[in-house]
Length: 426
Image 1 (cartoon, one colour):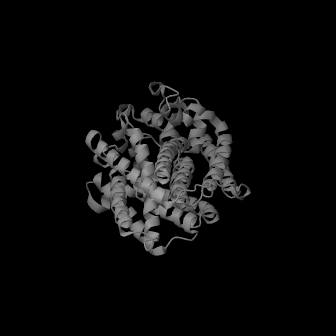
Image 2 (cartoon, helix red, strand yellow; image 1 turned 180 degrees about the vertical axis):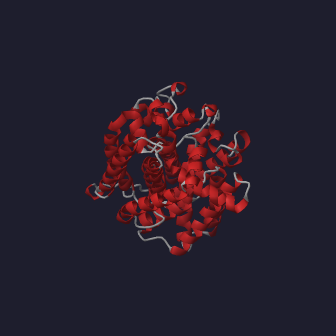
Image 3 (spheres, one colour; image 1 turned 90 degrees about the horizontal axis):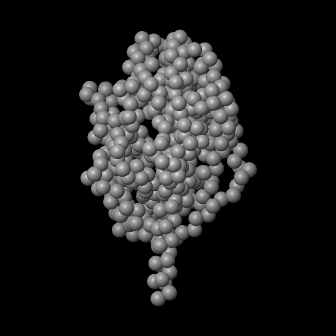
Protein backbone atom coordinates (compact mmCIF):
# COMPACT_ATOMS: atom_id res chain seq x y z
CA UNK A 1 0.00 0.00 0.00
CA UNK A 2 1.39 3.37 -1.04
CA UNK A 3 1.51 6.29 1.36
CA UNK A 4 -1.17 8.17 -0.55
CA UNK A 5 -3.44 5.09 -0.50
CA UNK A 6 -3.08 4.80 3.26
CA UNK A 7 -3.92 8.45 3.88
CA UNK A 8 -6.91 8.22 1.52
CA UNK A 9 -8.13 5.26 3.58
CA UNK A 10 -7.44 7.28 6.73
CA UNK A 11 -9.50 10.22 5.48
CA UNK A 12 -12.40 7.90 4.65
CA UNK A 13 -12.30 6.07 7.99
CA UNK A 14 -10.99 8.83 10.25
CA UNK A 15 -13.35 8.02 13.13
CA UNK A 16 -12.14 4.40 13.21
CA UNK A 17 -8.54 5.57 13.32
CA UNK A 18 -9.18 8.05 16.14
CA UNK A 19 -11.01 5.42 18.25
CA UNK A 20 -8.16 2.92 17.74
CA UNK A 21 -5.59 5.62 18.56
CA UNK A 22 -7.37 6.37 21.84
CA UNK A 23 -7.61 2.68 22.76
CA UNK A 24 -3.90 2.12 22.01
CA UNK A 25 -3.00 5.27 23.98
CA UNK A 26 -4.91 4.00 27.02
CA UNK A 27 -3.35 0.55 26.68
CA UNK A 28 0.20 1.96 26.56
CA UNK A 29 -0.33 4.62 29.23
CA UNK A 30 0.58 2.15 31.96
CA UNK A 31 4.02 1.75 30.34
CA UNK A 32 4.52 5.51 30.39
CA UNK A 33 3.52 5.72 34.06
CA UNK A 34 5.77 2.81 35.01
CA UNK A 35 9.05 3.85 33.38
CA UNK A 36 8.81 7.58 32.53
CA UNK A 37 9.50 10.13 35.26
CA UNK A 38 8.96 13.18 33.03
CA UNK A 39 7.16 14.11 29.84
CA UNK A 40 10.49 15.29 28.39
CA UNK A 41 12.18 11.98 29.08
CA UNK A 42 13.24 10.80 25.57
CA UNK A 43 11.63 7.45 26.35
CA UNK A 44 8.26 9.19 26.82
CA UNK A 45 8.55 10.75 23.36
CA UNK A 46 9.44 7.39 21.81
CA UNK A 47 6.47 5.78 23.55
CA UNK A 48 4.14 8.43 22.13
CA UNK A 49 5.52 7.71 18.66
CA UNK A 50 5.04 3.99 19.35
CA UNK A 51 1.35 4.65 20.04
CA UNK A 52 0.98 6.14 16.55
CA UNK A 53 2.98 3.28 15.04
CA UNK A 54 0.93 0.57 16.77
CA UNK A 55 -2.32 2.18 15.72
CA UNK A 56 -1.54 1.58 12.04
CA UNK A 57 -1.60 -2.26 11.84
CA UNK A 58 -4.70 -2.44 14.05
CA UNK A 59 -6.40 0.15 11.83
CA UNK A 60 -5.40 -1.80 8.70
CA UNK A 61 -6.84 -5.01 10.16
CA UNK A 62 -10.11 -3.34 11.18
CA UNK A 63 -10.45 -2.04 7.63
CA UNK A 64 -9.72 -5.55 6.23
CA UNK A 65 -6.49 -4.46 4.54
CA UNK A 66 -4.20 -7.09 6.08
CA UNK A 67 -4.38 -10.82 6.75
CA UNK A 68 -5.26 -12.01 10.25
CA UNK A 69 -1.90 -13.84 10.54
CA UNK A 70 -0.02 -10.53 10.40
CA UNK A 71 -2.38 -9.00 12.93
CA UNK A 72 -1.92 -11.85 15.42
CA UNK A 73 1.83 -11.85 14.86
CA UNK A 74 2.03 -8.09 15.42
CA UNK A 75 0.01 -8.20 18.66
CA UNK A 76 2.07 -11.10 20.04
CA UNK A 77 5.46 -9.69 19.07
CA UNK A 78 4.67 -6.17 20.29
CA UNK A 79 3.20 -7.40 23.59
CA UNK A 80 6.21 -9.57 24.41
CA UNK A 81 8.58 -6.81 23.31
CA UNK A 82 7.20 -4.32 25.82
CA UNK A 83 6.90 -6.86 28.63
CA UNK A 84 10.57 -7.72 28.26
CA UNK A 85 11.62 -4.10 27.69
CA UNK A 86 10.02 -3.07 30.99
CA UNK A 87 11.62 -6.03 32.75
CA UNK A 88 15.06 -5.10 31.41
CA UNK A 89 14.59 -1.38 32.09
CA UNK A 90 13.57 -1.90 35.71
CA UNK A 91 16.10 -4.54 36.86
CA UNK A 92 19.43 -2.82 36.17
CA UNK A 93 19.94 -1.89 39.83
CA UNK A 94 21.53 -5.32 40.14
CA UNK A 95 24.51 -4.03 38.15
CA UNK A 96 25.73 -0.84 39.87
CA UNK A 97 29.28 -0.73 38.41
CA UNK A 98 30.18 2.67 36.93
CA UNK A 99 32.93 3.91 34.58
CA UNK A 100 34.48 6.99 36.13
CA UNK A 101 35.80 9.62 33.69
CA UNK A 102 38.11 11.89 35.72
CA UNK A 103 39.05 14.94 33.65
CA UNK A 104 39.41 18.43 35.10
CA UNK A 105 37.29 21.26 33.71
CA UNK A 106 40.30 23.02 32.17
CA UNK A 107 41.07 19.96 30.04
CA UNK A 108 37.38 19.63 29.17
CA UNK A 109 37.39 23.28 28.03
CA UNK A 110 40.45 22.66 25.84
CA UNK A 111 38.64 19.65 24.38
CA UNK A 112 35.59 21.88 23.85
CA UNK A 113 37.67 24.35 21.81
CA UNK A 114 39.14 21.50 19.77
CA UNK A 115 35.65 20.22 19.05
CA UNK A 116 34.54 23.74 18.07
CA UNK A 117 37.39 23.98 15.58
CA UNK A 118 36.52 20.58 14.07
CA UNK A 119 32.82 21.41 14.01
CA UNK A 120 33.34 24.71 12.15
CA UNK A 121 35.50 22.96 9.56
CA UNK A 122 32.84 20.27 9.05
CA UNK A 123 30.13 22.93 8.73
CA UNK A 124 31.92 24.79 5.94
CA UNK A 125 32.97 21.59 4.15
CA UNK A 126 29.32 20.52 4.06
CA UNK A 127 28.25 24.01 3.02
CA UNK A 128 30.73 24.16 0.13
CA UNK A 129 30.89 20.62 -1.21
CA UNK A 130 27.61 18.99 -0.20
CA UNK A 131 24.34 20.43 1.02
CA UNK A 132 22.05 20.59 4.02
CA UNK A 133 18.94 18.42 4.27
CA UNK A 134 16.56 21.35 4.70
CA UNK A 135 17.33 22.54 1.16
CA UNK A 136 16.59 19.16 -0.43
CA UNK A 137 13.28 17.48 -1.29
CA UNK A 138 14.57 14.28 0.34
CA UNK A 139 16.66 15.03 3.42
CA UNK A 140 18.69 11.81 3.25
CA UNK A 141 19.70 12.49 -0.36
CA UNK A 142 22.34 14.78 1.09
CA UNK A 143 24.28 11.56 1.80
CA UNK A 144 23.81 10.01 -1.63
CA UNK A 145 27.15 9.86 -3.42
CA UNK A 146 28.37 12.10 -0.68
CA UNK A 147 31.68 10.34 -0.18
CA UNK A 148 32.85 11.25 3.31
CA UNK A 149 29.78 13.28 4.28
CA UNK A 150 28.39 10.36 6.29
CA UNK A 151 31.57 10.26 8.39
CA UNK A 152 31.59 14.02 8.86
CA UNK A 153 27.93 13.97 9.88
CA UNK A 154 28.65 11.32 12.51
CA UNK A 155 31.47 13.38 13.99
CA UNK A 156 29.36 16.55 13.92
CA UNK A 157 26.50 14.74 15.66
CA UNK A 158 28.71 13.66 18.55
CA UNK A 159 30.19 17.16 18.85
CA UNK A 160 26.74 18.78 18.99
CA UNK A 161 25.83 16.57 21.96
CA UNK A 162 29.06 17.50 23.75
CA UNK A 163 28.64 21.22 23.02
CA UNK A 164 25.06 21.33 24.27
CA UNK A 165 26.02 19.66 27.56
CA UNK A 166 28.95 22.06 27.90
CA UNK A 167 26.60 25.01 27.39
CA UNK A 168 24.16 23.73 30.03
CA UNK A 169 27.04 23.27 32.47
CA UNK A 170 28.37 26.80 31.83
CA UNK A 171 24.92 28.37 32.29
CA UNK A 172 24.42 26.36 35.46
CA UNK A 173 27.79 27.53 36.84
CA UNK A 174 27.81 31.03 35.37
CA UNK A 175 28.87 32.69 38.64
CA UNK A 176 31.97 30.49 38.92
CA UNK A 177 33.21 30.83 35.33
CA UNK A 178 34.64 33.70 33.30
CA UNK A 179 32.52 35.87 30.99
CA UNK A 180 34.73 34.81 28.09
CA UNK A 181 33.80 31.15 28.52
CA UNK A 182 30.12 32.08 28.81
CA UNK A 183 30.22 34.25 25.67
CA UNK A 184 31.96 31.58 23.58
CA UNK A 185 29.58 28.87 24.79
CA UNK A 186 26.54 30.99 23.87
CA UNK A 187 27.88 31.72 20.38
CA UNK A 188 28.70 28.06 19.74
CA UNK A 189 25.37 26.93 21.18
CA UNK A 190 23.51 29.14 18.70
CA UNK A 191 25.78 27.86 15.93
CA UNK A 192 25.03 24.27 16.89
CA UNK A 193 21.27 24.93 17.04
CA UNK A 194 21.49 26.45 13.55
CA UNK A 195 23.34 23.39 12.27
CA UNK A 196 20.77 21.01 13.78
CA UNK A 197 17.99 22.99 12.12
CA UNK A 198 19.76 22.92 8.74
CA UNK A 199 19.99 19.13 8.79
CA UNK A 200 16.27 19.16 7.99
CA UNK A 201 15.38 16.45 10.53
CA UNK A 202 11.81 17.17 11.59
CA UNK A 203 12.28 16.58 15.31
CA UNK A 204 16.01 17.28 15.61
CA UNK A 205 15.63 20.30 17.89
CA UNK A 206 13.99 18.06 20.49
CA UNK A 207 17.59 17.09 21.18
CA UNK A 208 17.87 20.32 23.20
CA UNK A 209 14.98 19.21 25.40
CA UNK A 210 16.17 15.62 25.80
CA UNK A 211 19.70 16.67 26.72
CA UNK A 212 18.38 19.16 29.26
CA UNK A 213 16.40 16.35 30.90
CA UNK A 214 19.48 14.11 30.88
CA UNK A 215 21.68 16.88 32.31
CA UNK A 216 19.28 17.63 35.16
CA UNK A 217 18.53 14.02 36.12
CA UNK A 218 22.04 12.58 35.76
CA UNK A 219 24.30 15.54 36.58
CA UNK A 220 22.22 17.68 38.95
CA UNK A 221 20.09 14.75 40.17
CA UNK A 222 16.90 16.80 40.11
CA UNK A 223 13.90 17.16 37.86
CA UNK A 224 14.12 19.76 35.06
CA UNK A 225 12.88 23.31 35.58
CA UNK A 226 9.36 23.74 34.18
CA UNK A 227 10.19 27.23 32.91
CA UNK A 228 13.22 26.00 30.98
CA UNK A 229 11.22 23.03 29.67
CA UNK A 230 8.58 25.39 28.23
CA UNK A 231 11.26 27.54 26.59
CA UNK A 232 13.08 24.61 25.00
CA UNK A 233 9.83 22.95 23.89
CA UNK A 234 8.78 26.21 22.20
CA UNK A 235 12.10 26.33 20.34
CA UNK A 236 11.76 22.66 19.31
CA UNK A 237 8.13 22.96 18.15
CA UNK A 238 8.72 26.22 16.26
CA UNK A 239 11.80 24.68 14.65
CA UNK A 240 9.83 21.61 13.59
CA UNK A 241 7.04 23.73 12.11
CA UNK A 242 9.60 25.81 10.21
CA UNK A 243 11.13 22.65 8.78
CA UNK A 244 7.71 21.37 7.75
CA UNK A 245 6.86 24.74 6.22
CA UNK A 246 9.82 24.21 3.89
CA UNK A 247 7.88 21.33 2.31
CA UNK A 248 4.40 22.86 2.58
CA UNK A 249 2.79 25.45 0.29
CA UNK A 250 -0.23 26.14 2.50
CA UNK A 251 1.40 28.08 5.32
CA UNK A 252 1.02 27.37 9.01
CA UNK A 253 -1.99 25.07 8.69
CA UNK A 254 -0.12 22.97 6.14
CA UNK A 255 2.85 22.71 8.51
CA UNK A 256 0.61 21.49 11.35
CA UNK A 257 -1.02 18.91 9.06
CA UNK A 258 2.44 17.77 7.90
CA UNK A 259 3.51 17.41 11.53
CA UNK A 260 0.46 15.23 12.30
CA UNK A 261 1.07 13.18 9.16
CA UNK A 262 4.66 12.62 10.26
CA UNK A 263 3.48 11.29 13.60
CA UNK A 264 1.05 8.92 11.87
CA UNK A 265 3.89 7.82 9.58
CA UNK A 266 5.73 6.23 12.50
CA UNK A 267 3.85 3.13 11.39
CA UNK A 268 4.72 3.44 7.70
CA UNK A 269 6.54 0.09 7.66
CA UNK A 270 3.25 -1.62 8.50
CA UNK A 271 1.29 -0.12 5.61
CA UNK A 272 4.13 -0.82 3.19
CA UNK A 273 4.78 -4.36 4.40
CA UNK A 274 1.57 -6.04 5.59
CA UNK A 275 -1.05 -5.28 2.88
CA UNK A 276 -0.79 -7.67 -0.08
CA UNK A 277 1.93 -9.59 1.80
CA UNK A 278 4.66 -7.33 0.43
CA UNK A 279 6.85 -8.19 3.43
CA UNK A 280 7.20 -11.72 2.04
CA UNK A 281 9.06 -10.36 -1.00
CA UNK A 282 11.99 -8.70 0.80
CA UNK A 283 15.40 -10.37 0.57
CA UNK A 284 17.51 -8.87 3.35
CA UNK A 285 21.08 -9.71 4.23
CA UNK A 286 21.66 -12.10 7.10
CA UNK A 287 20.40 -10.80 10.44
CA UNK A 288 23.94 -10.35 11.75
CA UNK A 289 25.15 -8.39 8.73
CA UNK A 290 22.00 -6.27 8.59
CA UNK A 291 22.31 -5.30 12.26
CA UNK A 292 26.06 -4.80 12.47
CA UNK A 293 26.40 -3.38 8.96
CA UNK A 294 27.39 0.11 10.18
CA UNK A 295 30.47 -1.42 11.84
CA UNK A 296 31.23 -3.97 9.12
CA UNK A 297 31.02 -1.44 6.29
CA UNK A 298 32.19 1.58 8.26
CA UNK A 299 35.40 -0.20 9.34
CA UNK A 300 35.81 -1.67 5.83
CA UNK A 301 35.52 -5.23 7.12
CA UNK A 302 33.05 -5.75 4.28
CA UNK A 303 32.90 -3.99 0.93
CA UNK A 304 30.08 -1.41 0.88
CA UNK A 305 29.39 -2.19 -2.80
CA UNK A 306 28.14 -5.61 -1.66
CA UNK A 307 25.68 -4.16 0.85
CA UNK A 308 21.99 -5.06 0.64
CA UNK A 309 19.32 -2.35 1.17
CA UNK A 310 17.66 -2.46 4.58
CA UNK A 311 14.22 -3.95 5.13
CA UNK A 312 12.44 -0.58 5.30
CA UNK A 313 14.15 0.51 2.08
CA UNK A 314 13.24 -2.72 0.27
CA UNK A 315 9.60 -2.35 1.30
CA UNK A 316 9.49 1.12 -0.27
CA UNK A 317 11.26 -0.07 -3.40
CA UNK A 318 8.71 -2.90 -3.74
CA UNK A 319 5.80 -0.46 -3.53
CA UNK A 320 7.44 2.31 -5.58
CA UNK A 321 9.94 0.82 -8.06
CA UNK A 322 10.53 4.28 -9.56
CA UNK A 323 12.21 5.26 -6.27
CA UNK A 324 14.85 2.54 -6.58
CA UNK A 325 18.29 3.80 -5.65
CA UNK A 326 17.03 6.75 -3.61
CA UNK A 327 18.05 7.25 0.03
CA UNK A 328 14.65 6.40 1.50
CA UNK A 329 13.29 3.85 3.92
CA UNK A 330 10.33 3.05 6.14
CA UNK A 331 10.61 2.33 9.86
CA UNK A 332 11.23 -1.41 10.19
CA UNK A 333 10.10 -1.65 13.80
CA UNK A 334 10.97 -4.86 15.74
CA UNK A 335 7.83 -6.80 14.65
CA UNK A 336 8.60 -5.94 11.01
CA UNK A 337 12.34 -6.54 11.21
CA UNK A 338 11.88 -9.77 13.14
CA UNK A 339 9.29 -11.17 10.72
CA UNK A 340 11.35 -10.26 7.64
CA UNK A 341 14.36 -12.05 9.14
CA UNK A 342 12.86 -15.03 10.98
CA UNK A 343 9.21 -15.32 9.98
CA UNK A 344 7.07 -16.19 12.99
CA UNK A 345 10.32 -16.73 14.88
CA UNK A 346 10.46 -12.95 14.99
CA UNK A 347 8.43 -13.23 18.20
CA UNK A 348 11.50 -14.75 19.87
CA UNK A 349 13.59 -11.90 18.48
CA UNK A 350 11.13 -9.36 19.98
CA UNK A 351 11.52 -11.02 23.39
CA UNK A 352 15.32 -10.96 23.28
CA UNK A 353 15.56 -7.51 21.71
CA UNK A 354 13.11 -5.96 24.17
CA UNK A 355 15.04 -7.32 27.15
CA UNK A 356 18.42 -6.31 25.71
CA UNK A 357 17.68 -2.71 24.78
CA UNK A 358 15.58 -2.16 27.91
CA UNK A 359 18.47 -3.28 30.12
CA UNK A 360 21.12 -1.36 28.17
CA UNK A 361 19.07 1.85 27.88
CA UNK A 362 18.65 2.03 31.64
CA UNK A 363 22.22 0.96 32.31
CA UNK A 364 23.66 3.78 30.20
CA UNK A 365 22.03 6.37 32.47
CA UNK A 366 24.24 5.21 35.33
CA UNK A 367 27.21 3.78 33.45
CA UNK A 368 29.39 6.90 33.45
CA UNK A 369 30.34 9.62 35.91
CA UNK A 370 28.38 12.88 35.74
CA UNK A 371 31.03 15.03 34.01
CA UNK A 372 30.50 16.53 30.56
CA UNK A 373 32.31 13.71 28.77
CA UNK A 374 30.47 11.10 30.83
CA UNK A 375 27.15 12.79 30.07
CA UNK A 376 27.95 12.86 26.36
CA UNK A 377 28.83 9.16 26.23
CA UNK A 378 25.90 8.16 28.44
CA UNK A 379 23.35 10.19 26.48
CA UNK A 380 24.66 8.99 23.11
CA UNK A 381 24.43 5.35 24.17
CA UNK A 382 21.04 5.92 25.83
CA UNK A 383 19.56 7.32 22.62
CA UNK A 384 21.27 4.58 20.59
CA UNK A 385 19.47 1.83 22.47
CA UNK A 386 16.15 3.68 22.53
CA UNK A 387 16.34 4.05 18.74
CA UNK A 388 16.06 0.26 18.58
CA UNK A 389 12.38 0.66 19.46
CA UNK A 390 11.92 2.40 16.12
CA UNK A 391 14.25 0.20 14.07
CA UNK A 392 16.78 -2.36 15.39
CA UNK A 393 19.29 -1.35 12.75
CA UNK A 394 19.24 2.25 14.02
CA UNK A 395 20.77 1.08 17.30
CA UNK A 396 23.92 -0.14 15.60
CA UNK A 397 24.08 2.91 13.34
CA UNK A 398 23.98 5.12 16.44
CA UNK A 399 26.46 2.91 18.31
CA UNK A 400 28.89 3.31 15.42
CA UNK A 401 28.50 7.09 15.71
CA UNK A 402 29.24 6.81 19.42
CA UNK A 403 32.27 4.63 18.67
CA UNK A 404 33.69 7.26 16.31
CA UNK A 405 33.03 9.98 18.88
CA UNK A 406 34.72 7.94 21.61
CA UNK A 407 37.82 7.33 19.47
CA UNK A 408 38.18 11.02 18.58
CA UNK A 409 37.57 12.09 22.17
CA UNK A 410 40.15 9.59 23.48
CA UNK A 411 42.79 10.78 21.00
CA UNK A 412 42.20 14.47 21.78
CA UNK A 413 42.19 13.89 25.55
CA UNK A 414 45.46 11.96 25.30
CA UNK A 415 47.06 14.76 23.27
CA UNK A 416 45.78 17.40 25.71
CA UNK A 417 47.21 15.55 28.71
CA UNK A 418 50.56 14.94 27.00
CA UNK A 419 50.91 18.62 26.08
CA UNK A 420 49.84 19.81 29.56
CA UNK A 421 52.30 17.41 31.23
CA UNK A 422 55.14 18.59 28.98
CA UNK A 423 54.47 22.21 29.94
CA UNK A 424 54.06 21.23 33.60
CA UNK A 425 57.50 19.63 33.86
CA UNK A 426 59.31 22.44 32.03
